[in-house]
Amino acid sequence: MGLIGKTIGPALILFSLWDDLSIDEILERKIEQTLKSIPLKGEGVFKEILSIVEKSLIKCVMEKVKNNQSKASRILGLNRNTLRKKLKEYELGP
Image 1 (spheres, rainbow, N blue to C red):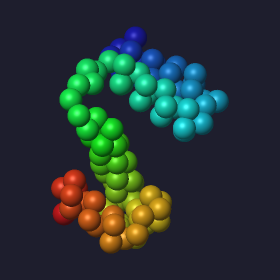
Image 2 (cartoon, rainbow, N blue to C red; image 1 turned 90 degrees about the vertical axis):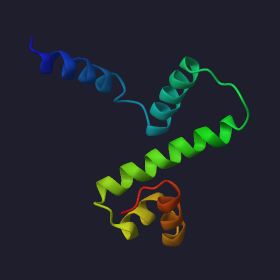
Image 3 (spheres, rainbow, N blue to C red; image 1 turned 180 degrees about the horizontal axis):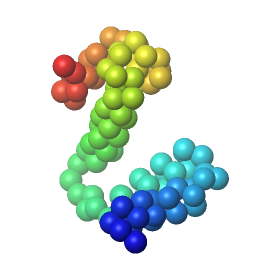
C-alpha cells in the first residue's frame, strides 16, 4: 500500500465509524479529545477556546463560500456587520 493508501485508508475508516453520529456528537468528541490532551492553565480558558473555535468556523465557511460575506453570514446566522467585525478581529478578511 502506497503513502496515499496509508493516509486515506485510516481517514476513511474513521469517517465510516462516525457516519451515524450527528455533527454535534462528532464535534463534542473531538473537542473532548483535544481538551484532554492539552494543559489548561491560567485564566480565561473558556473565552480563549471559544475564540479559537469561532475563528476556525468563520475561516472554513468563508473558504467554502469563496469569501462571499452575504452567504457566510446566512450560513453562520450572523448579521453581516457582525461577520465583518469578526473577520477584522481575527484578521481573516482581504
